[in-house]
Image 1: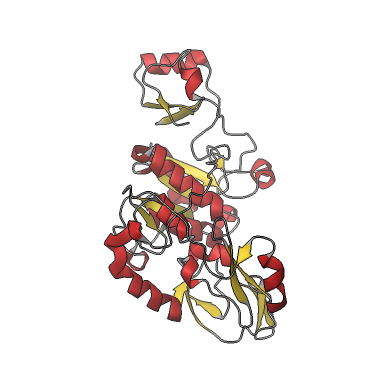
Image 2: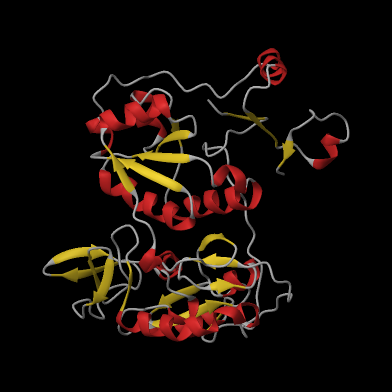
Length: 347
């Protein structure tokens, strides 16, 4: 069994949150010249379809088995990025600043009819607004044209959810694109491996046989405490938080990201399968429990999974040369005082 021991946090637990301040980038896109051939395809894709995100599409599009196709039933009466009326049913659709998770770059943001696209002048964050709000927002630091920004020419490639390789994280953020994984894109999202499902009995068996298996409960903490699969951890694995989890793992502990097998458990199968697919696309082997927590055949535990190891237990594991991966998350200045031999600092 592989132990992930942290001072202060447990990997992939709810305390492992990567606080990230966006880095501004050039409007000239000079950092992902290697992927310029893909931009034409991306532009065409945005004109006809895009990926759905959590079952939602941009304004004017409808979800068809995970792909959003054009549907003009969302009229100008809908507030951009909130809801629209389709077949007499009010349906939520992707807000502009969430469209990056569907692979839509800032240059291709989709607004409902009658709405105007505007950008924050300091970070190019997009918003779709009413006509009578344009002038008011200009006085509050917004503008109609995407603001020019600057980046270094350092080439540290990252792959975006749109399947485009960007020269560095700065270039990715300039396009307001969601992070997929470090390094150049290997496969497009159209060719990515589908996440696998596990039945209750299969998961129970895997928890016994697979030492690299990590079961993560995606439900809210209260539901987790009311009853969960013994040995599972609770964490937020959706939206921007999931994006941070993936980025942190590949940038800080890539060897762990490439070796673990994650199984997601949600209230429903849909909730877990969507996040599992995102993680698989990023290169993390991820499965999900069929039909969610309700399908679990065994008794649910109300005991919190231990995340604390005493100094005596840790010393004994190190002496026994157990398969321990030790992460030190203290400030660099604290390492000058004392540091356990063999540990890795990820601050």
